[in-house]
Image (tube, rainbow, N blue to C red; front, side, top):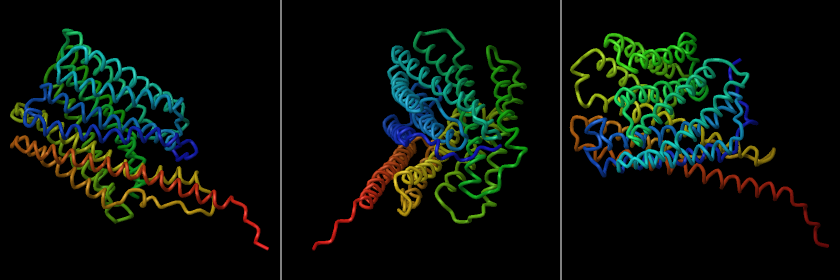
Length: 442
């Protein structure tokens, strides 16, 4: 049984919206951070400035939006009811917001107390979130590639959080740990074992539904999640506690890179066979994400196979930029432009009554504004990649990134305001229909 849509199980609209409206603020902060620090922010992946920038985007933007999306999608699309969603929402949102700010401040100030506080907020809130989501996924009667991928992705989130907490604990308490190896494994699980698996699990469901494409082929959807999870696990064991032979690490890394590459190629091919040929913003965001994923995996393969590429100081920045700014941020933006208008329409249906017309989904957020945000984000990506060779371009890149996220925030606020406005209009119309007719004057 494939997961189906269960609209009656949708949580209160405030559950996902607080995450959606918060995530772009961290993206704006990341763009302003680039304007503030300039080329120093991308000089080395190991510098505190680079680590602060990475976590503003990976935790503040990506993880924030992903948590909100899962709290909404699981009950509706997977029939997975989360225990006390409002409590999970409040704890996760507060812990994630405060924890991210403390973690970034810890990198900038290099103050151990900030890392200790960040560990407490992030670990408790995210492990509580992951446990609540995993239990819901294990209890749902739905089966299929989407459910399997989401379950494995949540396990990847557990691993990512534990590794991140270990690293932050080492900074906070000055523990002697193999920080370089732990950082490599933490990044691999955060971007691969959690984010890429979540994208695939959601993609199996929403790409055919929203973009009217054929379904993903069974050979990919049934094997992708387990194969990537097992390869990441084997690669991690090859790194920790002591690195194994280089040839084994290279082989496992190359095999792991081929899987997302295949997913991206298949996604682009399916989009080429879509039944509705019109170009809409979500399609462009998905195409950008799939194209960037192909490019990122190609660079990763070259890094593993060519010593010169591996030795180049800009290679990690190129891969990270392609994945975070090129893949995950566009895909998140594109999905928000589908999720928020649909949620507005769904909840407005409950507000009105038969005979009253609920505003169309396209009326929630003007499509022209979505296209504008896509152009700004594409400019930010191109400028950030070009900044590897010409560091001065980091300034316009930061400006474009801040503008893109500001535009996204503006669009989401517009969607929220329209939901409130349309809801008030529907309630007023219902109230007018319920008023008894006044008797005619004698």
